[in-house]
Image (cartoon, rainbow, N blue to C red; front, top):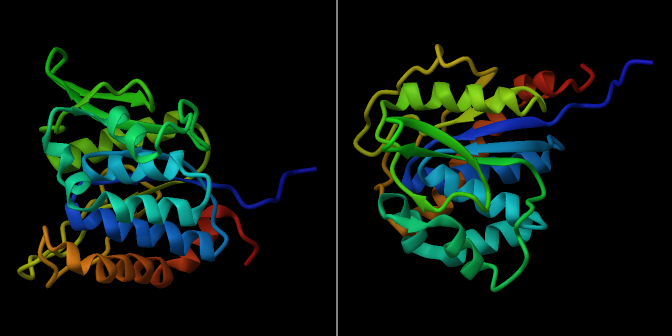
Length: 219
């Protein structure tokens, strides 16, 4: 008989300091709606969120760990610091060589002049990805497809502080693109992290029927 159980989705998480907290809201809301996350591919700050989520045993541990990292973790994608070393510090020696779900981080290779997608624990130094955002997201979607887990949902910040117009990412090959609107939230304003998370939850709620259909929930 065919397997009629809902499929997990694979998330591609884009960059952005406050976007990281919006992605946390998306992850929480997906869980509340019963949509399973089967894998994550991350870019920039999205890679940080993905690493913490994949290495956490529960949703509560994920949110607490992301919260306690504060400003330093949200700005670390611009630094040449080992991602694994920082995550190890956050989890205080917990063995996290194997994550609960497949996870890949996109790191720009200066030698190859392109993105490399590495497993958790093999990241070494984490450098900015130095590519056009749309191109980077497209490559991340291709990597997510290679995981062969389920439909691909891209999470990328839409409208930003200052009221800039949304960018369209219709051509990156994702099954669905979620764009939380963070207009009015300053990029480095840590005090607005809760509002950013709420906007992440809102975008899931607004697109829940599409998400349920992608995951194969009965109509």
